[in-house]
Image (cartoon, rainbow, N blue to C red; front, side, top):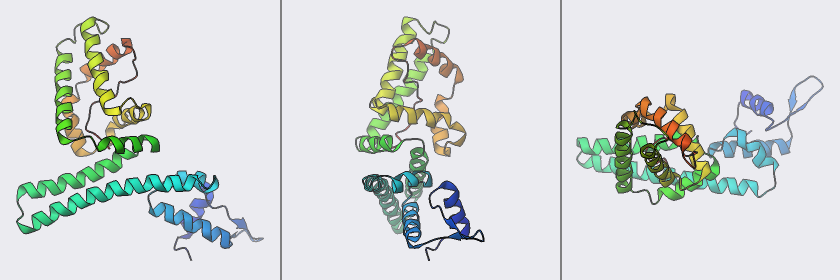
Length: 245
């Protein structure tokens, strides 16, 4: 009736999302209330809300679900914006396709894929903050920030033989912290998500891996890790990168 498989029902049972009663012969038994809950689960899954979050949403007070739906609406609206850009690029390419138009299509689709990958590393609240900050994160600002990171890595490379606690290194640590703070807005949740992104290097999308190639010198990371350890505060040691909102 709900259009799900027996295997899915067993999975929801194990997760505590939809606990079935048992008949005398051991079969799972469901009533109308269970069907209503299952339809809620199917709808939330369709909207992209993770299964691990659903039990709390369905079991808690009625205000929890509307708030989660509002957050998911924001995510879907962002996806729609990216899809509209992809459709516009394809329409343009249909008229007179050239390499620039085709590159634009690839760029927009990769942006969508990267956005989905980035989101999994951030909490719901951090994602909302990133989405708000993304409205002000222009291509010009991205170019400026990328240039500042490149200059910073170049300057760090020049003092690798010096004391990480010394004044030159600490000045660079302050620049590092300022650049990270410019991205996170001082939000601890965004900073934590950014560290998770860097820790998940094995799964970076291909274009992110290519973008970060210029920042892959482990000598610089080790030196700055020591310099940031001497800095105050010393908790903004996230990597450089493109805006992920």
